[in-house]
Length: 166
Image (tube, rainbow, N blue to C red; front, side, top):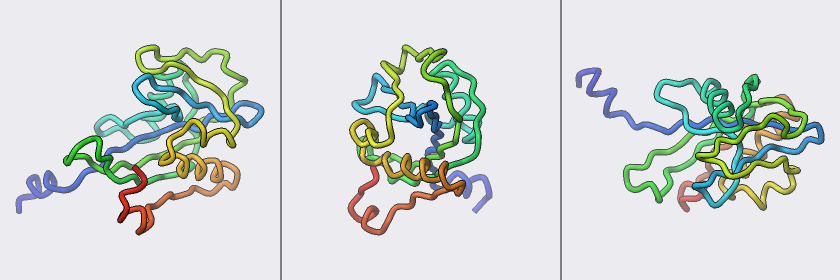
């Protein structure tokens, strides 16, 4: 098979990058998209050819109006295709980076077209705000920030068989 045709036939994934941002009390910044029923970390989908750390910086600037340094990679998560996106849906890989500590929400300017709110919440409150499929990746990022070791959040055989992680 000719190289271009072979390459075009390969499966693809959606790459997403998010930011772990704390305040001085170790609360985590979460944002509420107006197009979802749940809260999430600041971040979003990488554009074609965009490196995950660059996407993280761009998305943080777009969503909360701040240019923050993108620090080290904290966690990587693999997610199965979401059935809501149809039979052509692709799996996704999520990168979470350490974007430091803010002194509260002063200076945050939410992207009105996509976000309704933001808040700094204690880690123990995340389960009430984030979807269940996102909690393992965020908990892994928090553990990585504390330990200094990057965390990988793989699917288990049970997750794959049951279609969990979506």
